[in-house]
Length: 513
Image 1: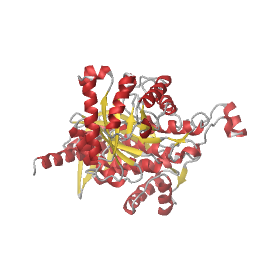
Image 2: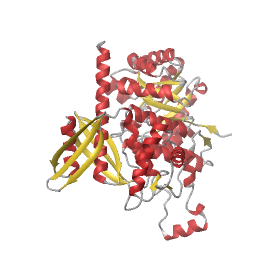
Image 3: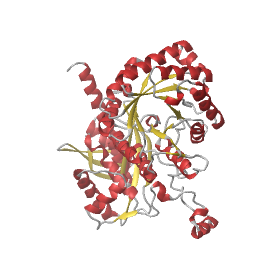
Image 4: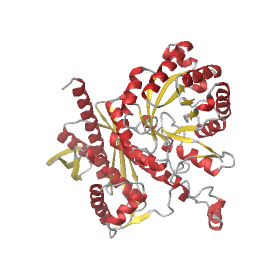
């Protein structure tokens, strides 16, 4: 029987640290539910000490998501560990993940600690974590640039203090497959009690080797891999979950390992994350990119007609991609819409379905064919209803130099109308929104893409807006790209206002008011 490799998904923690990929509590929960459907073993939900919003996000996931283990990250200091344990309290199977650097370059320049002091910190941190939470993972940050014999001492100390998982990360994406396989094999062989623990690999993609290094680490003895959907993460990203899983499945003759991943949910997971973060999936991205199963060259098309296996080493259906994504038209009913959304992994309440159906009918009247990605954009536009402050009710723009915009927003039962002029229709609309809300934002990034084929395609807009120096992302969708952009701006504004409200509540609570 093939060895089982556990998938530790850190999309909501390390992945969210990717510039522009920050998520609010509601978005994190939505993504966590999809990760549960995907079949990941562990969800690292966040870094609770970082902020009140981060704490609440971890706690909400711990309360709601039951099948996977829920992990929270903490530095090897008591206040971090205690905060993480508090966030994990509602979890059915919590994991407290604590870390400290072990490479000499980090010890000298960042920690300013000796090796003996680090070993003491490991013992203290893991011991405290184990007293608070039943399962503890310890990570030796920058392990791949650490002395191997010192890594053995660190692993031995962590295990003696109660660690269940030892993670040896390639924090800066520096290592190579040969080196990381050797590192895992050496540390596992030399560490007493290693057979009673799970060894884990966490790799960054700075040299484009994250997936290759993760596979090599498994061959060296790792039985847990830490990865992210679409490979998002700091700098060049992390090990791509979909690439890792499909490599082991497609080349099982070379990598005879199994996972619990439901591969048919890979596409839904990838698309949902892209919609939430606004990070567009590169067309040539393996497994999930638009061109991953496209065949344009004549010789390739001829081979595909004769036998699909000539140019496809896996099928699009195996990762949840249908060859035709046409799903619904304006004559489709609520039942058909609900069923299609469920097939895509969205669990909608009756209220949400009613709201979506109204948006769907409006869109279906404007274009003949409604595709899966159209539905994803519509659902994304509903995502922030739980804390929505403003909604775009009407938009009229005219002229070009200068442009003029009339904007009507609603807030609760009240409606507000303003006009403004600007350099273009989007700029003038944003100026009108500033007049209504009193909140000044600077649009720093703006992109629009067609979510689906055709001249009547739904345009999906993604923006990054700076409010009080804090970059906030927003998403909007419409067949009118100006309207899509303005919806995205309002979406970003609502996120900022929600975060501001959370901070004010936390400050009031701290003062006892």
